[in-house]
Image (cartoon, rainbow, N blue to C red; front, side, top):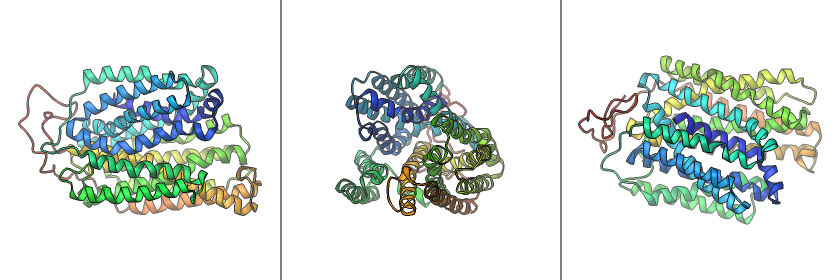
Length: 483
């Protein structure tokens, strides 16, 4: 059931993007306007994951997760029925609320269903599902768009959400809740007010220009809202984000490593399709199939990385995975117009192998460093660090690539530059990404084993009730038991 939520969220994001050109044509809209289909979804999901993670700790992850399925499926159906672009963008915003619920509660529900000594395997399973969604999304999205039309991409997730909702009502048991605490709506609004404009700026800054009035104004809004948010969280008795969790070194370090890593991996997601199409000369379909080797490698080692983390701790598999990714991305910088395709495939596979070894141990560190009664917040940070870092990374590496190409070509249109200028831009992006991954590897090498902290005083255990048990997690809904 949890895997269904993770799968449809990743499948939706990766399949919808490939259909944007066709949507623009069918709705007679310009591409900048159609971009809001993806951008509105991304902004809503990033701004709401952390608040919903916190809320799930207070009222139960089952309740938030099942509500997420309802909203996600309803939003998908509304997207399918959209008569125009404005309605479709609104439906995507509605759907992003459900996606945020599913993304924030999924890791906590999954970890809660496994013993503490198998947390890495649980995260390996989660990573495998994410990789399968990323692997099949572009392929399925392209096939459906070409055969049935782009509307049926949204309809694809409806039966999955119905099945998962029924299964969740039958199989899921409610999780422990934090007692004597309340939700902080003001803090949640302030958090949204700095994350939403920041995501917009990171995505649209390179397109509109960093000196444009809109971008500069939103940067100011984000700075003011962030400062106000921090002050409010310090003063709040029940903050939406308890800043004291950052005193836990393992948690802070693991989140920082995740941010660095996914920011670096955005270079592969953004630049590799252009590298394969504009420099190597592959068709769009061939480039898409080549990109599938990255999640294919990741899914093949995700469970192995989780098992190694359970046995030896996260330091060794995560560090090795980061080094493999760094070396693979650095090797991509040497690809030119004459590079044989057969030599590119191993680089993409090794990139995927590195991801598989890294993601499960690092995710296990994030989920295991906070008390089990705070798994919702931990899951929110886990999902948010991935999506936010991808958004910011694409802005950074896109700007680096464009700047270097224009400088090397002496001006002009970026993708119409010479092969030599394009290669210089790709090399700058890939070498920069490899350097960031090396920094992450150094940080990962200093990490020790995961030792869960005690439960917070605000969540005292209550006497167990025999009639209710959590799947794989003994205790009552009112009990916050330590691993």
